[in-house]
Every structure is written in structure tokens, then in C-alpha cells.
Image (cartoon, rainbow, N blue to C red; front, side, top):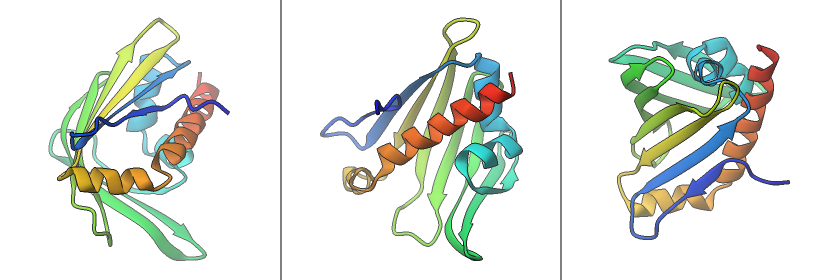
Length: 154
């Protein structure tokens, strides 16, 4: 199956550029990142906090058999509806340091849009460590679910 989410990693840079085109209007794509109930559906996680405003904060937690298997949090640095979200991302109980994430939402047509994620890591080594995990596959699967969930809201 084709991976629609593209992950670009230049050899000597401590960043990733991730792009994905969706068959969704830009406002619906943005809503999938803004609305806590929708985020929970496509990410398969519990959204404990999601303050969509400058200097707001967010926290997600995934459980399995009653135990926390993943938790992450951060601060929203900039929030412009239907255009961009800039935030920090910190995986709790992990050796990964916080990273900086820039999400840009672009209208392509009335019914299609593009998401560009620019993620900056503390070092190339941490970026490469993440790439050794099934990160790209998991993100592609999550974006596939986002497409399905948001399409049902049309």
C-alpha cells in the first residue's frame, strides 16, 4: 500500500519535513487538529488537554489494559485557524528531549488541502533515533484515519 504521508530527512540536518495531501477542505483538515474529540478518534488516544490558543497547552495519553503506554505534552506557541499551529512536543517517560513542531495548513482546491509539518530536534542523533522506529508508518496510518474520520464529518 502506498504511503501518502511523505517524510523527508536530509542527512546533515536535525529536522524532518513531513507532507501529506488530503481530500478534505482546509477548514476540515484544520478542525481534525483543533477539535479534541476528532483528535482522539484519529490518533486513538485520550486528549486530556487541548487549549488551542497562543500559550495554550496540550496533553495526550494512550492506555492499554488500564496502563499508560504513551503520554506526551507541550505548549502551543502560535495558533492561527486554518493556517498554522506551532507547538512543542515532549514525550513523557522517554529519553527524547522536547522538539519544536510547525504545522502549516494549505488550501489546494475547495475540496483538497495539504499539511506540512516541520519538526526540529535537539540533535541529528535524536532525529535519527526516531526514524529507526516505525514512525513514518505510524504517522501514515494516523493520517489515513484522519482522512476517514474527517471525511465522515463533511
